[in-house]
Image (cartoon, rainbow, N blue to C red):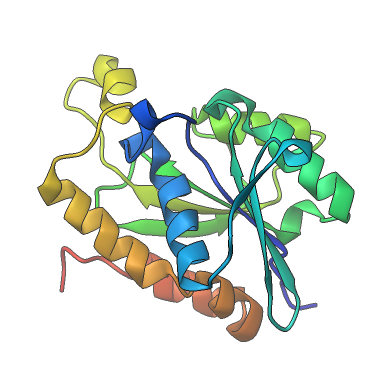
Length: 197
């Protein structure tokens, strides 16, 4: 049976002090996609986040949790439960320390890799990790002990430009998955690097 994405979630922390920080890259991407598709994101207390819906060949729900990152699962589980959306119909977009700026990876399942947002989503979906993840590279500091400060700060413009180019390339990810199949989407996204063009 073909994969259909019914919910796309962008992870980040709420508040202007976290806006456009590296850790909010997932939320930035989903907002970019929502803007492109003219999806109006509005605060919805029932889903603990900003919510909007795109109606094409089928409804796609958009969610930007306004819980803090480590409570992202509360929002995802609330919306998924209400609309009876299965884990393998969910795409979560988040920042990835182990990929450099300008690279992305799309996959299904796997561990949380130390990402607290992913960890909480797995827990709140009944320990089911079988959802899709679009990991957008942000790189990592030379000193791994400085990770917290690194992710909670804004990237310099040179890095941000690479990340934005990658995000623009990935904007069609939903259409690629739902219209062309997951294998094609994975090949197109995972094979992209704005560093190698």
